[in-house]
Length: 144
Image 1: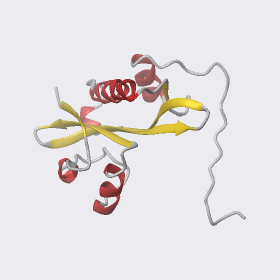
Image 2: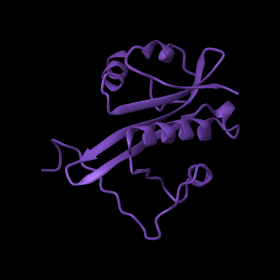
Image 3: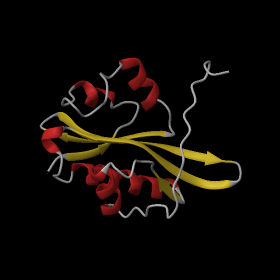
Image 4: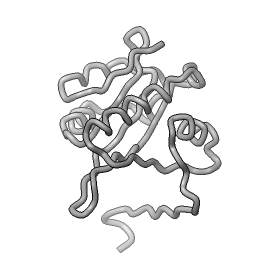
């Protein structure tokens, strides 16, 4: 099984070797440094033989009138490693860390038709909302 680790601002070099298909786009060293340099941004990776084969990212979300939460932003696993528990292991580590941070809950959005994500989130203890959610996307600077 891969080694599961939570990255910090001084461990960005772990992302120097990433398997194809893990992230949507090539990594930018500037964006990696910015993401890992923010204490509220979290990246848990699965590393096999020095290569990142999976990840989950989250944001420690705070609000003036609500307890802390973890927004699970994105998860990715290299195609050749899917179905082997990599996604579940990274999710579990992020959820353990969210608990240590005092997060009351963690949440993620997905499409009901994304069957792999639905299985993963259920397998890691997630409970899907009993009602449909609607997501709006905004593009600052456009659509004014």
